[in-house]
Length: 589
Image (cartoon, rainbow, N blue to C red; front, side, top):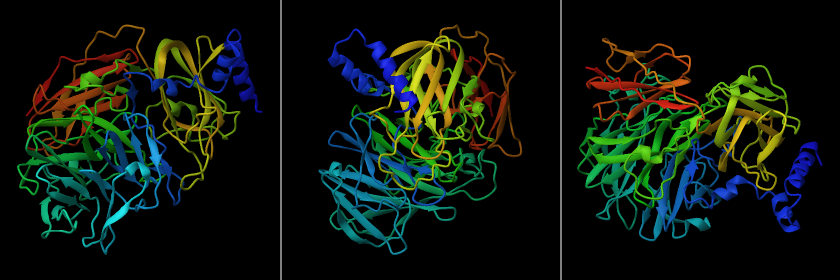
C-alpha cells in the first residue's frame, strides 16, 4: 500500500471516528465522490471540453481524439457519435455519458451521422472511393446494428442524413477546398439516390472572413468547406457548414438559409454561426444541431488542441437560437466556463449562467517536479496548447495552487495532458487516479474528491461540488495515470467571488482595415485588475452574438468579418471577481 493511500485512509478514519461502522464503511469505499452526488441534483452544470472517455488513436503519435460529432435523441436518450472514438455514447441528461462498444459499425471512418426515422436509427459515416454502407438499429443502446444498404454508390466525406417533416430523406455531404457542399434525396425504402446530387454552396473568402484559413483567418490558401448539417425550424431550412480547417482555433460554422432542402440558399446575416477563437480551448466548428427534451436547441462541436497531432481534438456543447433566418446564432461566450443544463425551456444565454468566475488564471503553483518546456506555470495560463508535466507518473507527484485569497470554490476542471502516454486504442482498466484536496492555510488539508473506486479514463474530469468550500489552496496528489507522466493542460478553479467587482469600465478603439474589410483591430488601455477581456460584436446593438475572448492582452485583431456588413462592438473585462459589462458600443461602417 503506497503512502498516499495510507494518508487517505487515515483522513477517512479521522473524519468518521464517531460514526457507525456502516457509515464508516460507506465513506471508506469512496461514496464521498462528489460526482456521484451530483446525479441527485435537480439542476447541474457541465463544462467544455466535455467530460468524456476520449479514446487514444490507433496510430502514432499517442494522443486522444474525438471530432465531427452528431447527436440524436431516441426514446428519451441522447446518443453521441464522433470520429475515431471506438464506439458511441448515450446519456439521459447531457452530463453522464456511457460508452457503447460495437463491432457492427465502421468506427474508424470519419464524420458519422445518424437520423431517427420512427422506431429506427440510421447510421452512416464517410465512405471510400467505391461507396459505402448505411446501417440501422431499433435499439442503439444494445450496440447491435444491421446493414440497411450494402452498396451505397456515392463516394463521399462528411455525410449528414436529414429527415424532413414530409417524410422525405436527404443526404448532405462534402469536404473539399475545391468542391462544394452537395445534397441528394434518398429513396425511403432502398436508401439509394433518387436523382443526381445537387451542388449547394462553396467558399467566398473575399467576402466571408470566417472562411479564411489560419489561426486568425490570415492565410491566403483556399479553405476547406465541409461538415454540412441541416436543421429545419418553422418551415425554414438552416444549412450549416464548417470551415476553414480543423486544426485552427478559427474552425467555425457558417450558415445559409432557404425555403427548400435543396436550395437555393442565401448567406445568413449573422455569420459565423458558431465560432470560438479565444479562451482556454478554441474552435466551434463541424457541429451538429439537436433539440433537448425541453425543446432547446444545442450544437455539439469540434474543439481543437492540436499539440501532439493536428487532429488532437475534443468536443464542446453550446446553446443555439433560431428566432428567424435573420436572427439565428450559437452562443459561445465564455464557452469553456461551467453552465447550467436547463430543466425547462430557455429564452436567452443568461438563463444558463452560473455567476461563477475563473479563480485560477495565472495563480502561482508549486509542484513535485517539472520538465523543460512544461513548467509549472503552464498549468494556470488558460491555454490548452501549453501544459505542465511532472518528471514521472508516480504517486510521488503533485501540484498545489495558491488562489492568493480565501475563495468560494464551486467547481474544478482537471485537464490531463497525456504526456508521453504511449497508449493506442482503449487500454483495459486505464484510469486517472488522484486525490483532490483544499486548504485554508497550506498545512491542514481536506479531501473533497477521490477516485479510489470511481477512477475513469476521462482526461477532462469536471467536478461540481455539492456544497461550495471556502479555501485558498487546491492540491492534486497523483496516484496513477493511464500512461506517461502526471501532466495537466490546465487546472481550472471556478467559484463565486468574495470581493467586489472593479467599477471602472473599458473604453476602446476599433479600426477596420481599409484594404481588407474582413479584418479589424481593437485596442484598449491595460487594466491591472483585469485577467482578460471579451469582445462582443454583431450586426445590430441588440445582436452582439459574436464573442472573441482575450487573456492578458490589451488588444486583438479579428479576421472573421463579412466585408460587406457594418458591425457594432463592445468590450467587457473580467477577473476572478466576475464580469464588468461595458456600456460603450462602437459602430463600424
